[in-house]
Image 1 (tube, chains in turn orange, red):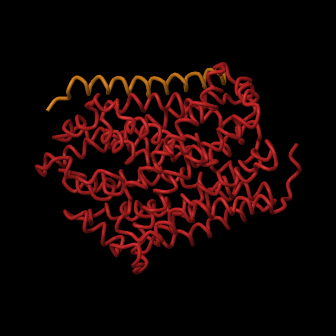
Image 2 (cartoon, rainbow over the protein chains, first blue to last red):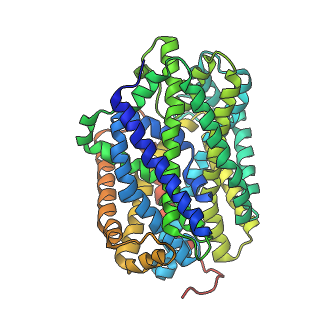
Image 3 (tube, each protein chain N blue to C red):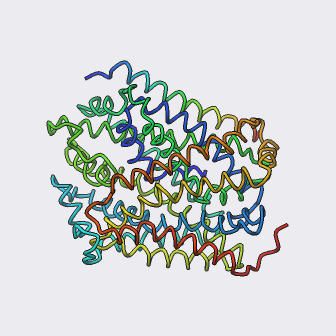
Length: 34
Length: 478
């Protein structure tokens, strides 16, 4: 069974907001420490 | 890191996937993200700002706003203490199941095994005996909490450097293993396929706000206490974003670990997901272990990984629930940290004993239901009212802005003063209506529900005023 397109869209949406956002703020934290 | 550890707990692994699935699958992510940015992060910033500004525990911080408000600070530290008394019992279950994973002792009847393991009498009125495996696990967890906390904040830092990455790595391994199982996509599809028609349902939005509120360890005095340890130049706003996104990201990942294995179970057993126990203890101690038993190889290892991940996720949250009250006692009465922690751990252990009996799981359900639906929401509302309305909120905003280059504008004041209180009031009203119209425990006598549900809340309120009145030894707050 393959994943429906709508589920793939939600997967990408969730991953980008959560992990992309986390990576960005962790990067800012490290940048701020330098 | 400690704040991340506190926020990420058992609730992320079983609560988020279940709530997400129950409220429109992938569509739930939309209200969930809205809730993160309109309530979760602004409240985290508020709590971080309070602790960082007051440089002390919640009773100290509320007293700094005015002596008459100290009771509100005590409520916020007593509430997580009560939560810890049953949270640690669930960890004791995980501890036993970690050992049972070695030989997959639950066999093919995980449901019956779980009932026997609990010594469940089937009624909260029949206490039955104390379950020895749970008692031993309980003792082990409380001793761990004491050993982590009694020397103070430095040891917390060392522990979370292990207990945050280890379960995350284990969760990633479990997710990869889960996704490679036949039928995994059935589960993932169930988890993520959006039902957009649910977006018009107010209950879905309330569930999203409730999930964010409980998952972020808000209104428990934990974030206020931890942020008081932050360096003066720490970027409060950036930290709040990191904690929120790490917490939500872990929950999102846990959904893949859990639903991929659940999908595999449905395919291998030829049953529908709807027939499986998906909520709370059912998912963690019945459905998931059953799925583990069906794994083609290394089932014991993956079973152990799962329960070690739960234990290590849980331990940060557990000790963070004890830290605010022991730190508050240490701060107000100058009781040594070791002594304050020891007293709290012994008291916690004694209170936990009731949940190790045959009636334990039923009583746990009642206490948890009332604390999460009413207690935490009320404290969140109190924080917004006291810091948003009784005093100049802009002072806290300016304090947060001093250390951050993400500038908080007046929008933050509006969220804290109007939007979040409105949401919390609606949550409270809905919870009251739901409890009145649909008795959550129709088979239990009313007096018992009042005793274990409303009783702890009333005791916490009364005790907070008593603790406020007891004269402290700390320097006068100016």
